[in-house]
Amino acid sequence: MATKRSYDDGCATAHALDLVGERWALLVVRELLFGPKRFTDLRTGLPGASPNVLSQRLRELEESGVLRRRKLAPPSSARVYELTEWGRELEPVVMALGRWGARSPALPRKVSTSVDSMMCAVKTLYDPARATGFAADLGLSLDDDRFHLRFANGLMIRRGEPERPDAVVATTPGTLDQLLWSGRALSDAEAAGEATVTGDRDRVERFLTMFPMPEPALHP
Image 1: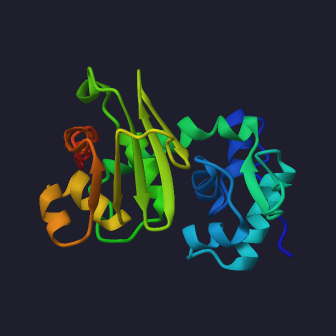
Image 2 (image 1 turned 90 degrees about the horizontal axis):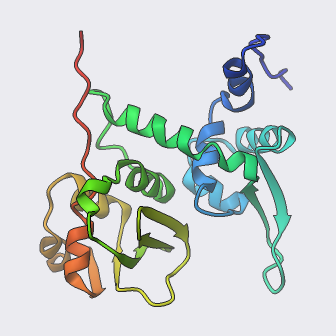
Image 3 (image 1 turned 45 degrees about the horizontal axis):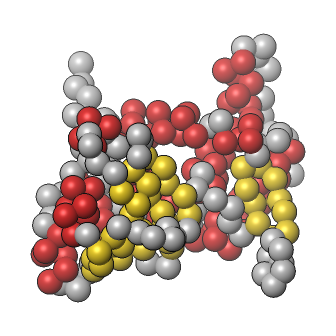
């Protein structure tokens, strides 16, 4: 097995890159930001990573204290990976990189993304100014994944379903991308059978306006 490379530099930034700078490492963190996942779930979210490479990244991140493995309580008893408290401190790093990358003129807009990548984009591009006076508990179903979005002095996103949602939107990551950033009308997606809304439709329409894409950076 190849020896993990190191910058051999006393700078804390260099040390951080020693820990999470290998290919796929930060994307593993991205996939775990909203809750624990099984290995098979991580493979689904990171289809470009081979099982061997993914296993190696998980092992390295566990050894460095960024994530841990645990066994779910019965009746599931599945083994999952989850971020440690210290690992969760990487969330603003991932979000900042996402916002910076969103300004790239070369951002590939036609390449599919994982469900968790979509939710990271939602949290990254959330504009509090557009949410002034807005409060809601929304359920978002993206294929087989369920998320709870709470708007109350900010935006909280977690994996799971709200107990008493004001509205629930069921769609796909690709359709949500179109609704948020390609100007597609919600009524059009509904008519095409690509989205359904139950509950307070006005809150859903408002929700779709809160995530503006930043202006692309200019080439010198």
